[in-house]
Image: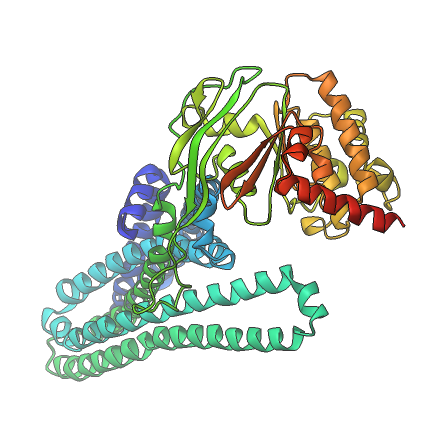
Length: 599
């Protein structure tokens, strides 16, 4: 979809507001071109001695009334137009937000957060201006131009009108040249603003790391360079926009010179009255607005076109996951089965601006290969293995953040794509390695998936996650605002708040992705004991625990040891110890480490 098609479709949907604005602008244009003609008639009447007393006051009253009507209609069209244009901005921001919220991780791996934020601000604003001010300025300027030229040529003198138009073809050529430069300048400005936005987002997110490593001066210097670059790009765009003004001024000056020279000769030869020449020069002065409007419209359209060139592809980007399923999950959802599941992450492309044809993208990396398992309702599965073995990748496949390249995953007898994506994810409570907390109170973060939960239910979930006592020690208890990403809490507290949130959701499937890595062994033992008690209360809930601490999975019904994406060992805690493989070796090492720590 082009910018023209976008705006045309929006105008069709909101035609009453645009029609009202157009009618008011037409009224303004008609009154505006009528005023010079009326002034010319008044001047000729005064020169001839025809206008005196009440007649003169009546003619002047018409001029005052026309001026008042013009002022009122100018206010009216702005209210009608901008009210409609703001709806386009709201619509685009909503579409962008909804589209981004449906995209999978692979989409965001190829996009910068700061760039996406810039699309929702500067770029949408530019498109909104193109649909609002540019559209009506084009209508107003064109209508005024046609009416003024008609009055100049047909209402005053056609010879004088045609002579005054001689400089305008040169102005049109200058406008074409300037508009091409304006488009490129605004595209560069928007791109550089995105880079600056990205640096700010990353700098603020990692400010503590930058401070700890003493890198704040270097980060500030980088920001200053990006800010200077963005400012320079915007300045260049403004400079090219400003070039419209001298093009208009020089053309109108040349036209005025021609009009006064030829008009004076026509008056001297008594082919034109003084009043007519006065009206003509006033009409010529009224051409200033259409000419400036043309420059303003071209500038806004080029800015909008550059913005839509960045925004449109993001809105039209295909979803990284197909959500064509229509089935709802049964309660309980049934057995979870993986059959020969294989998965590879897509090739790593070079960073934007760093592509090198001689250096091909890194090949796809196999994260999982031939993984099979079956987990009945109410069972607990433990996933262990060295770093990079594919444990988190397996959970991402269960969440349908990615699709398997081979094999399939089924739940309750249906493969996962047959379920609605929203219904599937609502049935899964996931606690990732790095839990995300919103800048809200502790209670609101825990109740995120269950907003109607009572305070008693929230506190009970916090007790199960062994974080209740920690919360009570906070300044405002459960009403303490944790700050962006939970910055006011420790890593262990964030993990336990996220576990409490998952437990409160009552989802039938619970995924813990190394969610106990930041807590001590005593707290881990307490949380696992609470999970066992909860399992007795809700025997249908499946639990999948990914952990580097084997003590977290020792009571699981089934334990899988993943190594380089393959299932290296499978069994219960006792059978794996007896097998004397990786699991048994790691268990002895961790037990020795725990005994040394205790000593």
